[in-house]
Image (cartoon, rainbow, N blue to C red; front, top):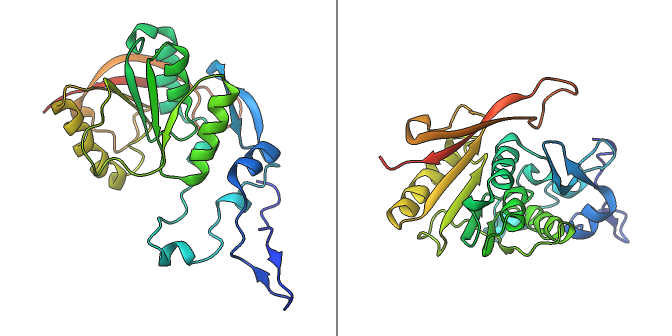
Length: 242
């Protein structure tokens, strides 16, 4: 990813001050490119590239957060277009009646691509939930760049009650068994509350296929695909009660 050296301030004693934090929004605007998403060109996102030096922003710079009970630094999922989010965004833009006039939650929002698509398609209100502080900054910048309004929640809502929304959209939230075990009970509480849940995913290993009904498939590239590689089909699913 280019120069991965952390830019630390140097104290008078000659040692770097690792307590200094880069401002996420300023870093993103200065070092990342605002570009259309290949499979969803209606949406532009601030995206990482080989010269962005992204490690300077995402590496832990000290142990203070652990002392304060803060979560450890998260991988920069928000800096790339993942297949699950892209397929859900594509489906929403192709079928705006899914979100039109409804209150929508973008769960594990990452870059905010799904929430942005919902806002563009006429959702009455869009809430994006994202626990990564850098992702929170990216969502705000991406929403502004696409001319939409999104309310951002910067903490883990999966431990709480079902939100006051009509529809939950979850793109690529089953990327690990640990996250799946946290997300599924939350989605079950949403179903009990009468909230519809749609999932976007390229069939990752922890996807609970027994709980899903396939609605549509699209060919979209995924993060990590080699340049020029053929896109694999990714699915849009309805999350069903047991």
